[in-house]
Length: 417
Figure (cartoon, one colour):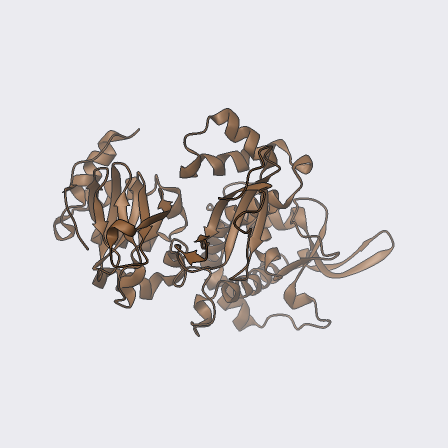
């Protein structure tokens, strides 16, 4: 790509020493000391999107990545270039511009990339850049060169895919035959590991239970599942965190409420593992128990990383009137991290937290609304991507699965533009 006026100084931050040091430490990977890596690691941990990365991946990024600071209005690379690097945004924001012709003056800005987003994955297959990227303000980037990124992708595909847009991102389907890279298969295995560990360490938790003269076969109690998970690992931070971890399994049907309730609750409610849905499911063998014991720490770490998002989805699915004070705080905290809302006051964000609703469109090609229609909702894209089509001409990227938060009935009705 084209790199012009890219400076290696840093911009202001609440932790200026860390940022300053991070900038200097990121110049030459081959010359970095252990202290340099620690400084960069501290900087990365300030970015919420990196919280889900396993420690070995973070350390490899710290050892091999470069730091770049762009002033406002700098073109990082142009549509059609063959790329050499992958990027993640540490601060600031960049515009994504797409042109239907070879003339870059015709480029239309289709979206902006904020803190914690990543781009440049076309280096995986050496395809031309799909868009032109221009800094819209002073921005700090992490840059990983092609050979290093391909090596990290082979080892940590699932973690990295969470930052990427499709077709390489987490919404990908159909092109990957390795079941270990499928989130659903990972969660199915996670459910087996947890069930086997419970049967090994606390078998009394899974048993037939009676309630109101009805017997529920081979089930667990919500509060006991939370108690057990909190005791297993220091990476389970709170009971609310544990609820999100169990909710991630419940969303995929790996754990089920006996009466098919959609949200996991830290209450005296009955839940059943998928393996216990069939009658007379055999108990795990000693070999299976041993394997599950070995996999338990990694399984809990995986769920600890995806639990907060599952908890947020569960809360957003509640009608606004059903949300607790804790629920509103969790939504508010998420809104604080959305770059597009940075200009709004905290009072407005708290108001949004009480009315925002969750919506998921798993099928590519779904039309959210048509040009010219009167609008009834305002959307925030949480994950995935959408096309923008104006007068029949597509100026966006590919349509893919999309997860949105939206505010219904904003009070202003105007034709869609």
